[in-house]
Length: 378
Image 1 (cartoon, rainbow, N blue to C red):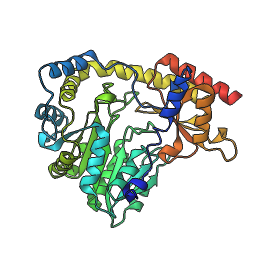
Image 2 (cartoon, rainbow, N blue to C red):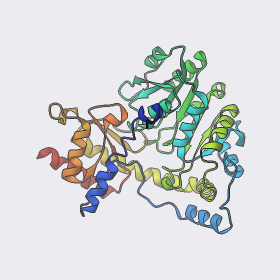
Image 3 (cartoon, helix red, strand yellow):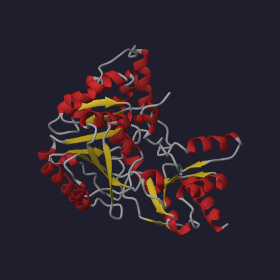
């Protein structure tokens, strides 16, 4: 009995490979410092928990509208000038939003251009839609509009950008994005913008979205998440803001895939939006301090650029590798010897690099890098 080509031709998430190894170390009683998972370590704000519990107590435990609670969709739509609830689809995390988008806009044989290095699920989700991911190397972690333009073919359906970027921490400038927006308008392409880390931009910088170009809004699809800014990773709430015809196509697919996102957690998401203005300044300041600490320690060990956003360092470890050694083997060695978990660059299409999450307590950052320093010394 054979599995489908769809199932056999994709790779499992390489960021998940280290979870069993970490669990085994913990089972052995060893302490693990998790620089691998992109999950803020602070607790979910109490107001969100209370709103979720209240919704459960009041009986909001039934099926809801497939595209999400109307009041949540209306609240999100206010973030997108000229948009309405009809443009918003609530999904099980932004990962499902991206999956639905590719299913809605791609046919077998289509191509989607993805700047690399990139988040692990982008190319596999394109393949799950029967399309072909076309990887285009970034230029020092910056968007290379010329390379993206050169990759366009008659089969190209969309370009995907991710800023702030996972894994590099780069925040794309208005000029960088303007070139991509112009290209997509010229070539009649969809422009997908994964903005899961839009709240995490440091040093007074500004997050720029392709949606800011009013003339391109008929082709721009934005995905965002409640997971990162509100420590709601387990809630699994994200959303897409899309042209109405795309949103309706996503809704149709969602109706057969899972139906609505958990009803009562959507009430928690509503509460999150209510406290966002008071919550985010303190959170951003904390994450900025952690960025500075992690970068200061990492740059003494590896070649890496200072992140502008998100909460990752993307370090070039090629000078630390033995002949023939991969970054994945290096990471497994560090985990085994020191209990520090990182994600190898191969997961993001960048051999010779590692991704280090600094979404952990400041003392843990220092402890983790001290363990790595001793590993390298030994």
